[in-house]
Image 1: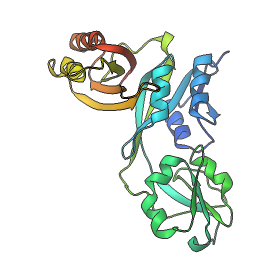
Image 2 (image 1 turned 180 degrees about the horizontal axis):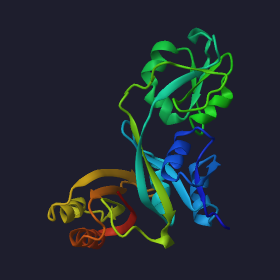
Image 3 (image 1 turned 180 degrees about the vertical axis):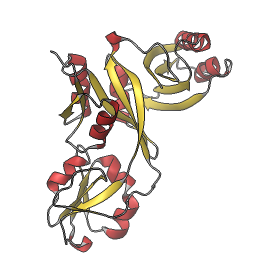
Length: 268
């Protein structure tokens, strides 16, 4: 399947993923899909040349579904971007807050606007949608949506202010390519996941491979391994050039200390 010139991302049009895809792949045709597994499948199958996914939010942490997919699929992250998240309440013109019974949006957006919802819409049921942009289709005289300030909300009113709990809110997005195409020759950041031996000191050994070489860790996050109680997969981001000898040696040492190791990306 020829996916040249296409980038898969979570739709519909106007989602933050769509905005990130337009920013990272400005000359590609967006392939707007309904779920993150579908976004990955389109890339792996060749239906798309690139894929763009959110991977971490500055408030709520890692996008867990995408961390799991990234470690399971034959893809690499080769570029990243940080987008400011600016949430607005979308309503029909003239609808009063006290008459709103339902608020639709993506789970993360609803969580990021919890203080506003509790203060102004305590009576409203919060209902999760596949994306923020999807909520625009569901707004009526008794329903509101939470969308990005960039969304095309024709016929609706957007709140004048950002309704998020934290105004300084960013989400990191990755541009992905198939693993067979390889990684960039150079990078400023390397991302990998590892499963340590289930014994005392194994995580310390992993971390020492970098501290002994004065390599800075910019992120570490753990995820339970499905079906294996008490064991975890660690996602680690480090500063450095993939071509640098110290980075190569540190990654080699980490691979030797771990039961499982997988390079997930290298990017600026």
